[in-house]
Amino acid sequence: MRTQIAAANWKMNLKYQQGEKLLDEILDTKLLLKDHQKVIFAVPFPYLIMARSEVSEEKNYHAAAQNCHHKKSGAFTGEVSAEMIHSLNISYCIVGHSERREFFSESNAVLAEKINLCLENFITPVFCCGEALKIREAGTQNDFVALQLKESLFHLTPGQVSSVIIAYEPIWAIGTGKTATTEQAQEMHAHLRSVIAGQYGDELANQISILYGGSVKANNAKELFSCPDVDGGLVGGASLVSAEFIEIIRSLKP
Image 1 (spheres, rainbow, N blue to C red):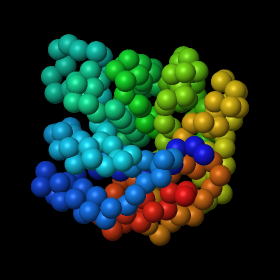
Image 2: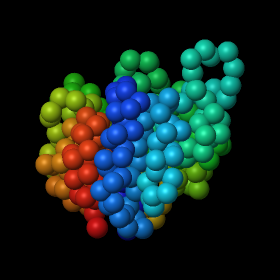
Image 3: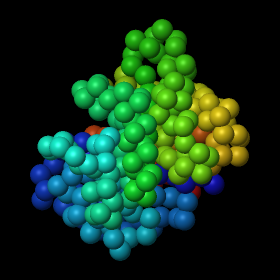
Image 4: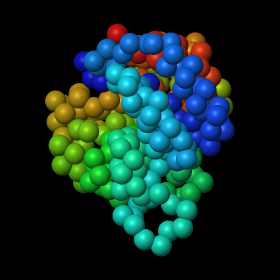
């Protein structure tokens, strides 16, 4: 079975003490993960060492960065490089979240650079793709997300791309309370897998975990995660509530 992942994206939320308390509440539940299951906490940069420490003794629990810069180093005040993240022993990083694309004008080409630097520094990228409402309404979402994959990932070797986690986020469903139906989620995830298969073959495509991100909650996670091509979720608001995220973890395919 493909790795099933519950990934929490805290975004720019929580004070340090609140984040520590949230992790304690989740980890104190002692949810034992199976070998094919993972939980990833993508926390703000100042909390990375704390989060890494919290999960260090837990099987298949990991800390992640929410972003990295697209250059190796240099005069980029306020930015954080993949090399810096690696030096903290953090092995996951979100790349290309829709908020980074929208608010910080990150292009597919820039994200390709970030992907390269993550892989060079032994960091697993969680690569986000997805369409806005106007693209969905125009019926061009399949071509749109295929282009995102091609321009940011398809320069990679099969060995490199096999280590990437993909997160599909319908932008119209992020923080809106709207959620893609199970049919819409499965259709897009299957399409993404077929696009990967067209470039790298069916065997590799069937190994890659593809997460759904878009108003995932405790009350819809199990239904979404039951879709054959949905391998868990990239969770925003619900990951900030311990009881919600605990149930989302429990909803991963057993």
